Image 1 (spheres, rainbow, N blue to C red):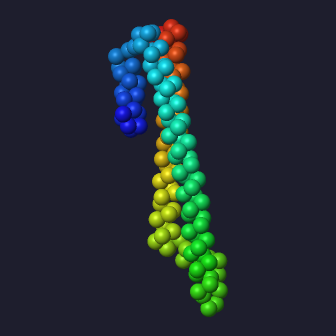
Image 2: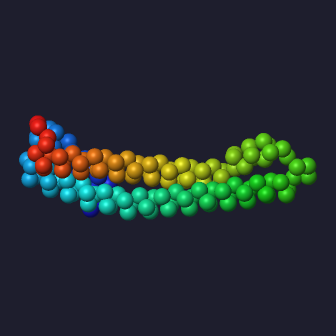
Image 3: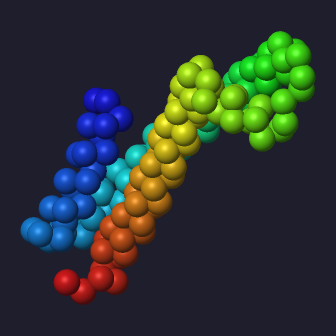
Length: 134
């Protein structure tokens, strides 16, 4: 099962729990399932965080390379604002920036899933203990 399928499956279980109700035994099982899901998301989050950090480093290196190239090729040194603008409009820099932005958005999305699964785990644990009156 892919990560996307796992998330969709768990989202459906949350929806079904409030539409159809859930027994204490089912809630206990679901609490465990969401705890395992947190472990899976945690691993995905680790990889996404590393990807984001690497893309950030790559973006800095690409920006620096184009900055130096602009400064070295200019007869008269351009102002910082001009240099920054020339770096920002470079297609390679824009592509690297887009990749970095996407990596950050993906990481943030995983953090939201982790938080939702943590809340679902607590919710189902509460139901399993009989502390939830539906």
